[in-house]
Image (cartoon, rainbow, N blue to C red):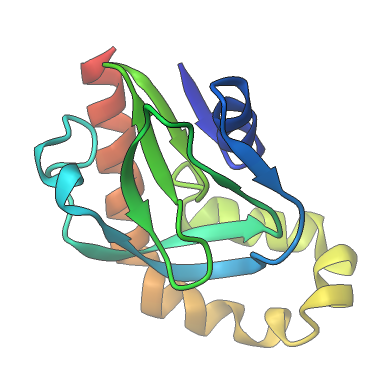
Length: 149
C-alpha cells in the first residue's frame, strides 16, 4: 500500500497516528533527510542521505506506534515511514518530476500565486537547481517501490 501526501496522512491515522492540520507548510523543492533506519530499507536504502524533492502541503502527522520513520525535513519531521514490509507513506511528492512541477505550476497558477506570489518568477531557477536530483530520487523511489511489491 502506498500513500503520498494526504495519502500518507490518512495511512498514519488509519494505523493509530495523529493528524495535525496546519503548521507544516512546504511548497516547492525542499531537502529531505533520511533516518538511519532508511539505510537498510528496500525502497529508500539506495538514496543519498539528503536530497531535494517536491513538496506541496500544509498539514502533517504523528507516526503510528509501530511505524518505522524513514525521512524528515526541517519543517515536517515525518516525511516517510513504513509499516510492516510494504505499507509506505510519503509526505513529499516523489511522483512529481520537473515537467510535472511545471505543469502543476501552470494549471494551478492562480492558486499558487495567492500563497507564493514569487513562484512563477523563480520556477525556472528552482527546476535548474533541484530538478535533476529530485527527478533521480523520485524515479529511484518509484522503481524500488515496484520492486518491493
